[in-house]
Image 1: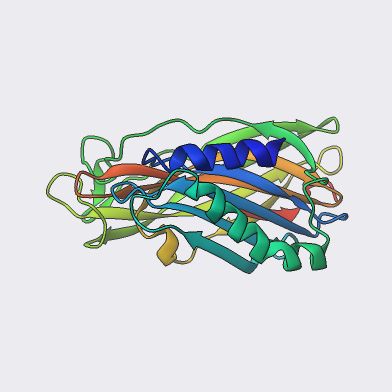
Image 2 (image 1 turned 180 degrees about the vertical axis):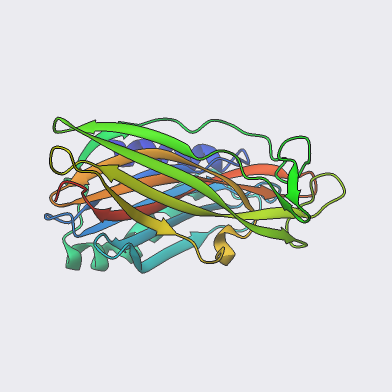
Length: 256
């Protein structure tokens, strides 16, 4: 049923450009060591529909394989279905080899729909610059998640990487790129507290070069591992419209 709903969404995207991708957690391997996430959407302006799928090593939080397909501009009705099938067919051998299946979605322990935001990443009235050329960052976001009688406290912070002429401007200044730092604090034993860094960008990759905001969207667990879906907000177009895409951050569970 879920795959059917995804295909129906892709069909709708063939008629209307959208700037919010639709994420789909593809599944875990039996022990959770491997996971996969897909997203589908339509590019603003051209209307081209696309599907992207990542296969990730949960223990290393590293990308193993990426599959992508995109239609031409102004696609015909139903083209989203075709693109979606193409990507899943390409990924099928890798998913089978690693044992990743939609029959193993894991357990969703926390979920929230990311909010819509208008991009004004370098505007001084939003984040006054304490250092020239570097606006202040928004406060770190915290997400308390209860699971198995224990509390996991996720902390998501934005990292400044300076202005980029490649990013749509905010006012008279170039847009800023921001990186991601994500950690979790837990108490594996009474009276103890351990903080683990799940991801800390040393640079902004090309796929996120104009990102101005991140939000946690979902936490799943399977076996000894967890997979976090993160919403990625980027600026695009002359008017700095907001695109929302997704990424997967994986790690061992804090209690394992």
